[in-house]
Image (cartoon, helix red, strand yellow):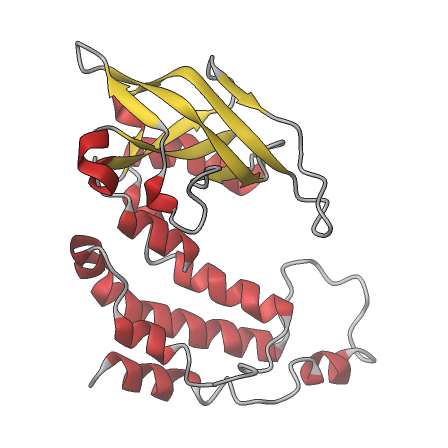
Length: 250
């Protein structure tokens, strides 16, 4: 059975266009107001189960091939469009549950066991991460970036130089995923993702942008001046930025 057909079969029973808050309203007079943040209504649990099943049954079997091909499987994205304009009438909480379910089957697969052990527990409890891709001259065409990474003579570290722009959460982040080119002659095929700790010498966070909205989320430039990053802090593979970028934005 094609992935899109599986997606429709799995999601339709739970994602019909109904009022997303109906269950919450029905329960409001019966349930105490001091419920823990982890409490999920019956509708939210159903939504979570549907999203998890879609991620496990439809997305997970294709993750390795998508990584090797460097592109998102079209049948997967089509399966997510079946509810059409207006979507499933989902609440913000249901959207979060869906993102959590989909993220679980792909992005964390790029880290080595050592990287996961070092960063994921802190990212889950105390630390914010920041995604550094855009630059002043490469926004929509992100892979035209100019930030470069030069390998040391002994191959033990890379030296990053460049400037990132409009980076979300950068003012408070403890770790940064920085995209840089290790071989400018090869264009986008030289782009690689590096894990850079906030306290790394040469990394500087600029003044936050004065935005019209979403002002509580900092958006700043990030400056990299002779930033030395150990070779074992590459996320994923050398010269393989596209699958990581696509999956993290999915």
